[in-house]
Structure formats: C-alpha cells, structure tokens
Length: 381
Image 1 (tube, rainbow, N blue to C red):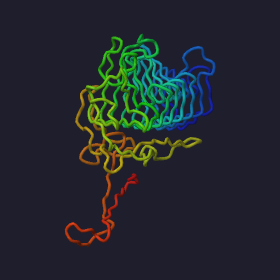
Image 2 (image 1 turned 180 degrees about the horizontal axis):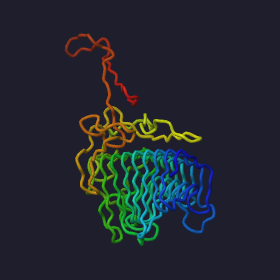
Image 3 (image 1 turned 120 degrees about the vertical axis):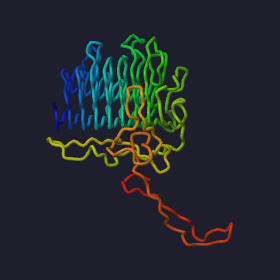
Image 4 (image 1 turned 135 degrees about the vertical axis):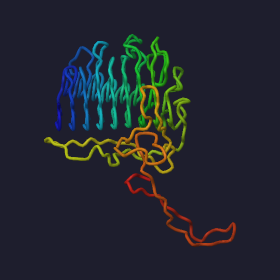
C-alpha cells in the first residue's frame, strides 16, 4: 500500500520510471510526476510513471508530466494469457504525460482496466495521445470520465482499441472488449476514436478483425470533434454502428448510426466544477489534489435529461445510468440522467426587464423584453 506519497524525478532504463508493480499494489492520494522510463532499454519500455506486472488500484491521485520512450507515458500494462493484469483507476487525473504510443495509458495483452470518475487530458504521443491497446485481449471499461485535450501525430488522439495485434499484423491475443458509459470525449486534436476494421484497429462493433471479434458497448456517451477534426474515423475501413449502443451524441455525424448527430451538445469550458472527490485533507509532505476536469453542459444542451436509465444487457449487465457523475453529483437531477460525464444541476430563468408594458397588436414595446439564465451551483451558463 502506498498512500499520501510523492514520486518525482525518478527514471528507469526500461519499465516504470517511478514504480514497477510486481505484486498487487494500491496507490492512494499520491502524486507521481516528472518520472521517465526507457532511457536505455533494448525491449519495449512501458510506463513513464507506473509499470503494472500484477495488479494496480490507483485512487484519488495525480499522474502527470511523465515520459515513456516507447509506450504509456503515465501507466504501462503488460499482460499474458497465463497472467492477465488488473488495473483500476478511480477519482484520478492523468495529464501532461507523453510517449511514442499512448501518451497516458498503454495496454499490452490480456488485462482488465476499469477507469471511473477520472480525467485523462493534455497527454501527447506520436500515436494515440490518450489510451491505446496494442496487442489485443484487453477489456477496457470507462465510466463517468473525461478524455480531453489529448494530441497525437496520427491514429486517434483519445482512444484506440485493437481487434487483434495492432503492432504485429493481428498476431496477438485476440479481440479487445470496450465499454464506454457516460463518457465525454471532446477537445482532442485529432479523431476522438479511431474506428477501423481490417488493419487491427477496431473501436465500434462486434466485427471480425483478422478472424477475431471485437466487442463494444457505448452508452450515454458524447464524442465531439474539434473545428477541424472529425469525432470518429470515417475512412474506407470504418466499422459503422455499434449493436450494444444507447443514447449517444456526436457533433458531426461521423460516429455512425449508433449516435445521434446534434449541433446543440453545447459544452462549456473544461474545468473541475467542484468535484466532490477532491475534498478533504490529504496527508503526506505534499498534499495531493487531482484536478478532475470535465466539460459542463450549458443551458439547452441536447445531452440534458437525454440519457438512458434502464439496464443494458451487454457487455456486461449494468445500469445504464450511474448513480453519480464524474464529480460525485447524484444522478439523475432531472427526468433522466444526462449524457456524458457531467450531470447538470439545473438552471433558473428570470425576467430582468420589459415587464408591465402594452402596445397595439403588431406594435413594438418601448423597452425590450429581457431575461437571464443563472445557476445556483457555480455551473456556467
């Protein structure tokens, strides 16, 4: 167990610039920053801060400004059929990390990675700025989380999963399984998700990739491309619809028939907006406060009260609407839960001028009618 600790400025010739977890380890309320992996490694170097050889539970922690020479700027996971790895990330921020592939999290081989109420933002890589699985056989479950501001030279800037072995012509561990539930993917500099079928990359379907079937479920999720970038890949290898998909939004219609295109997603500026998980005193020499950034929903957003709440069957059985949002705000606040990682707590509309006037039919009021929209919860309007 590692609690209320700081790992900074460490380096490793190969894996894990700060920590190599050969046994199950819990890291809680800690900070790992400025670490570097792969300084002199003849093999694949994973994990600028943390390399997972067994199991990792990362809770209410900040992992930032770490570098891997090869893959996983923040965290690197390497599993195999005889010893699949388990990683759980909750209430944590992974930001400003960098690598050649997967600026934040690199997943190699059989493993189960669960990410909840967390922010993965401002990470950079030559290939895939955020999370990438390169060898197949991985299960990735992301709930109530934000992927934002990640950048890459090519492939997706936020998230990539494989139908086989993306690095060695599908000769890996079989298909990945991806589940997204109440996730917001926006503000990344390239595609939110690279959804390809045929060269080892598959993000969007129960589809055959090199003889292997990738399984994907996407619910209550927003994928919004930037001004010059698409939300999802639409090239000749695009997969299209997701059979296990409910109540999803994109802003440009590139994510297929499983998404509803909307020009009114209306996301506010990225910020923390009072994340409950950040409250309380954290011990240790240097208090750690992970900044769990999220995109708020502005008044009139198509995502408000538009989420599915009923049980979804696959994959795996679960409530479509989590009981909290990324910040810890209870869901739903309205008639249904909101789509994405943020649950709006509502707005107030009030008249501010132009009352008590009269005019002839078809006439013009002497003073303009005016109203204001406000929030009592420090949410932007």
